[in-house]
Structures are given as structure tokens and as C-alpha cells.
Length: 114
Length: 110
View (cartoon, each protein chain N blue to C red):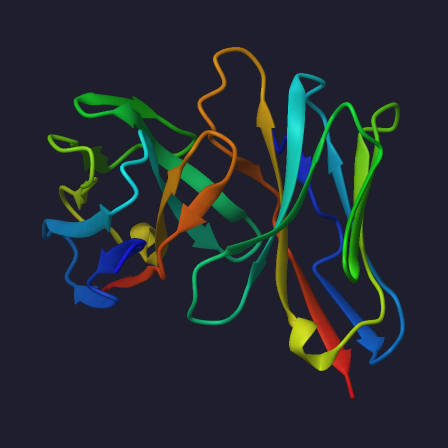
């Protein structure tokens, strides 16, 4: 049972345009959501996060939106740059006895074309 | 250098062999994790540890063994490797808010 889902395996956008990556979750006990970025042959690196008490968090070109009623979050990248081309993982944590362990989605490969 | 390191980066082993993947972190984080990355599945948790000598199963623990005698080390052992364990393995440590990942070990079982 996949608790965190990224239904789009890939996304291609033109440089300068907006990239929107989506993520759905099923466990209402999750209280913290994160996006990680992964380049080939490297480990995932933290990008941006949002607490369940917020509905938006912005950091430079990156904004994460959380819709708790729909159990949906999205990552917006504006403007997209070729260096943003990577795999993006959505992750969630929380619930009883929070250990910091993360439940990841399947990942979305973003390609930003020059 | 501060951070989290995994070794080896690449490993080829034969079916039935025992293999150990190493993980070392310098932040003194209490929590450490092992994930495997497979196409279509994202990152799945194998085992995690809340502190030295405290470990627990994750989503896909079968065929793996972990130990944590020291806070900074969290080795993952495949007792008898199978082809289905061909994957990229990531170790991570956490301050309970953010997880920090190593560069990964690409393991191929032939």
C-alpha cells in the first residue's frame, strides 16, 4: 500500500517556464512533508519542506503548497532552469512516535529544456 | 570531513554470497536509515535505528541484517544475496526533522 504517490513518472518543461510536480498521500497522521532532489550517481538532497499547519512555504524559486483536505501537495519551480533537471522525491513523516523516518513517493524525473 | 559516507560505491557479488555495505556519519545523529531505490518504487525503507543497539524493521527488511554498536556506524548486511537485491542502497542520518543521505552504493548481484 503506497502511502505517498507521485503519479507522474516524468515531466518536461521549457527553460523559464513553471514546473509543477505533484504528490498525494493517504495517511492523515503525516505532519511534515519534504521534497528531495536527486542527481544521477548522487544521494538525495533536501530541497524544501512544509509543516501540516501551513499551506504554503516558499524558498526562492521553489514553493510547496499543501492541501490537507485533498491530501495533496505540489512543488512549483519558477522559473525552471536546466540545472533543475533531476529526479524529485516527495516524502512524508510523522504520526505516533515520530522517528524521523520518511515515506517516499516513486519520484518524478524533471527535464528542463534550454 | 563532516557528513555521511557509504562504502563501497559500487559492488558486484554472486548469488548466495554475504555482502556488507558500510555507512558512517559524523554528525552524531541518533537516527540512521537504510533505503533502497528501485525504478517505479522510489526509496523504500529497509531498516532504521533510533540509537546504538536499537534497530527496527522498515518496509522491506527481508534478507537484510543491521547492527549498530556505535552511534556513527550503521552497516547493512545481505546474508545470502539474491538477484532481487540488485539495487542502489542509500544510508541516511536524521536530526528527526531532516534526513541527510550518503552518495549511495550500487549493488549488482549476478
